[in-house]
Image 1 (cartoon, rainbow over the protein chains, first blue to last red):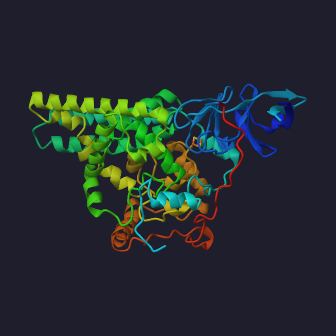
Image 2 (image 1 turned 135 degrees about the vertical axis):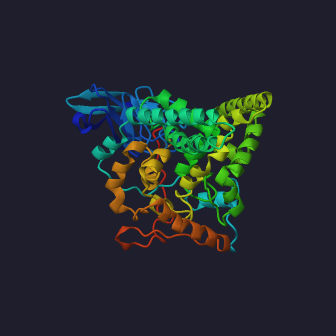
Image 3 (image 1 turned 135 degrees about the horizontal axis):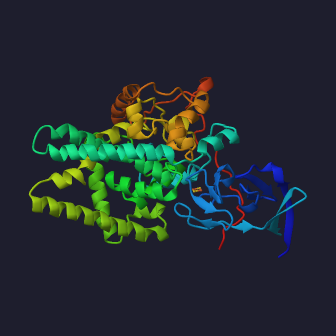
Length: 106
Length: 366
Ligand code: FES
């Protein structure tokens, strides 16, 4: 399996303590920026009912799903309790020259 | 297919039809709000719920103390009415808000109030967490939503019994015994995942133990006073829960994918809004369940022009609900058609026409 670094967005496209949606080749991701300027990426859809997490609320390192308020730690993908029971897949992220790259398996 | 009565069970004919017609876990209409404003509205804080909970608990303690002090005289009645409403009715909204995790910013505060309020309203916390999750996914979709309060044709006797939570309590007690024995109903199996089931059984046993202790105490002391404080208030104080709760969806459309058509927003006075924790802004709550109760009036101001006019009072809502329910007893196909802004007639609007397109997920962690 080849790991690809994909240019997802400009670092400034995401506000502090926020999330945006990034679609690539039919897959959808959520890219996060923390209050202290760290960047993370996870699968874009909630593991409960496949709702886009990018409409959710970021609180510290938690993303809360907009549909039933399920919470994940987006740094590890860990589901934090009902109604989300399945962890979220995470993806490595790097920031270079003010661009955010996500490592995606090809 | 010939017209038949609707099947509200979650494992019956209409459950299958809902899936076939794209009503299950579908895409719903949502008013558009700039992300910046929505983020502001979704912000959590502990302050408002701490203040409201302190006031609520103080009123509970004072009214209980008054009831106990005047026990045996008529003066105890008003104290128990207040205590009963706070215990058996306003616990509904506390259960609801903390179940969404939005009342407090701090998770454990939500959790504690969730378990306490669940007990007061006599709902099993895990069962109802999952049933309410489904209610939000498939609001008033027949065969999918386990929380349709008034199926058609309406059960008039059941509604009257529920003024004092009698029907719902019988149902819950049956469930408690079943769950305490380590089983679920077939319907519950459709929405409670395997990993949550042990919790259901444990809490059912704890509930039954508490009720047994209250019963023994009442028997030993030769007075129903302990039960007047724990257990019975769910019944004698439950009338405001149904009074508020029926305004949410009763008599409106089924099987639509737009909360503006199946949900009411009703203006209520400040006391009602305290008891009901602003759940009168119910369209707003369903559309944006992440917005805490204290921010719902602000959310309402942002979306109201894109919604049917709110009901000006609880009385106005009931002027519609009561005749509608009576009419539905004779004609179950009847429902209130809400008119959307711009004069659009609600009837064909979004009636299953927007169906979720399957997306390829980027995978779940193994
Ligand atoms: S869809 Fe995310 S919590 Fe239900």
